[in-house]
Image 1: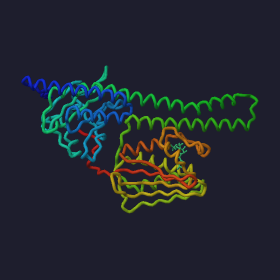
Image 2: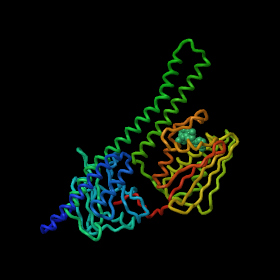
Image 3: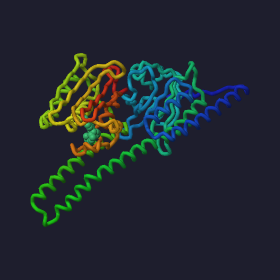
Image 4: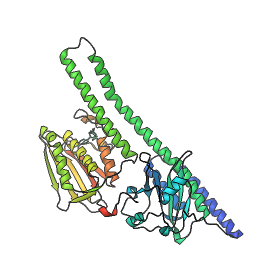
Length: 422
Ligand code: ADP
């Protein structure tokens, strides 16, 4: 790999000017570092790092690549490219034969003045994002004991070239950024684990208390059957919880990757209705679907969207009134997220106060506790899946009348979103 570091020749006036400029940069860097250390939300943090990198190096764009702790793969986690329709996050970057891979493996900065002609440039990203990389400076993201990724600043503004000061500034920023990313990841994990363990306590205590009662020799036979049933249903609840926990932990750590395929929306909706039909029949609920004729194919993660729809449908059944209705609508709307699906029910509804907390982890409306069992994670998981597709989810509801959940999925073309870059 060629590393073309620049050397500076300067007369004394220029040296003073450069020195002052450098001081200004370091002051700004200190300010940014303080800001980074106080951000524990990973997405916001990555965005702040990107903005800091472009500002400090005076470049057009920047990106962050992190090693996925589970698979060891190197992935784009964040980047600024306003003209791009494609999320960079779909890209896996090869460890061998890519510039970022080289930075991560060697733990050293790389400055390349002519990226297009560089043998390790992965031009598929440029072509997929309509972007042309001219020159770039990449530095490793390193905590005290390991390299966790790379930070790249791309295209010096005004057709400029990178200086050695840029290398030093970006390296200093990366050192702060790597620690802040590590902290945010740890914070997220510990927060989630604490909440999950707390939630496991209720069914575990119920099982322990029930087992204790069962062991009493004077217990009448009919009570015994009831207690055994309690243990069975609490175990079932624990089982559902662990599945939800794993799903959510993967989604929140960014380890869930979408497996996109092209499929017919109408078919997916029918399939979901079939799954819940018998449950709906038990409560004499009528389900109807209205798929607009402009809705046809979607290129998305079919399995995960099925999970979203099934969650909304089971909720619409669980929290409906007997002999109520469920209406499913699918249509194209204008704007950034053109495909919109709605699931409307005629159930208990959700108060304005509770609507605000609907997508919080483990939140269950107290009034509906008696209706049906649940983990209070279904909607959070559904929302995260929709957001992983860069869509949105929200609801409208009227207490006593019913609730409609909406979600949008942007339509992207299959060929502009290759999942893996060679
Ligand atoms: P779960 O149903 O497993 O408790 P969810 O995350 O799917 O978890 O839902 C969280 C809470 O939101 C539910 O406990 C219920 O109180 C409320 N809720 C969800 N969907 C509806 C709905 N369609 N109508 C009324 N309340 C709902």
